[in-house]
Amino acid sequence: MKILPTLMVTAFMTAGSAFAASTQAPTATPAAATPATKHASTSHCEKLAHEKKLKGDAEKQFVKDCKAGKTA
Image (cartoon, rainbow, N blue to C red; front, top):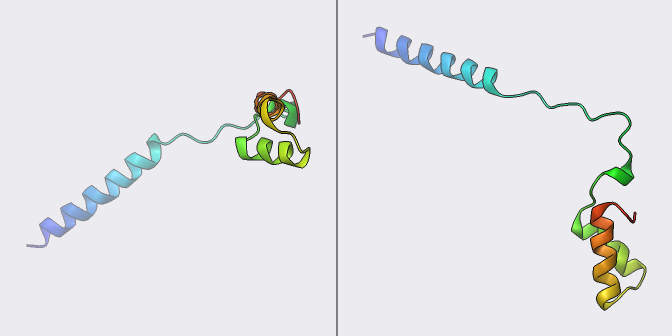
């Protein structure tokens, strides 16, 4: 009767190590990456546009450029 729980524990331990082995380690970002090359979030760009008191088409263009990394 003790063989069934032993097999279940062994199966869970094996499945856990197989899952851990299949995950990839995060890759390091290059040191040369600057904030200008990273994409900003929409909310961040919208906040900057509101601080500059932009409205309408000017605001939309600013947010688009900001997200593309053209304007910080």
